[in-house]
Amino acid sequence: MIELTDKAYEKLLEKTRGDEGITIALLPGGCAGFEYKLDYIGNRILDSSWKILDYVNFKIGIDKMSIPYLDGATLDWQQQGINEEFVFRNPNEQNRCGCGVSAYF
Image (cartoon, rainbow, N blue to C red; front, side, top):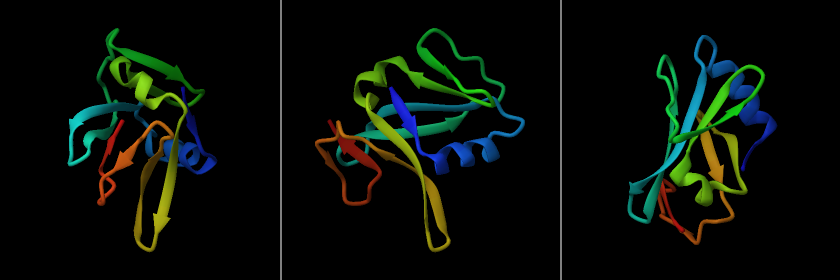
């Protein structure tokens, strides 16, 4: 499915306090075809269109339509200077746009 680096796991623990976790999906958009969408669950209840990965302290909901594209991907936390963000490392990508927002599969 999707792996988490140690840095991403630690950041999720920190950022999901009082929240239930995150959702991950690929949506049509961007200049390369699909855009990664990561959102916090909050009080939303996820229906059967989501696969739920239950970690001890948080959950990750993955859009079932996105599963084939995310299989084998890794979620990492990257810090460059004052910028920090979650980043997807996905071996299924055939190409990625120059700004890094979207990918082609």
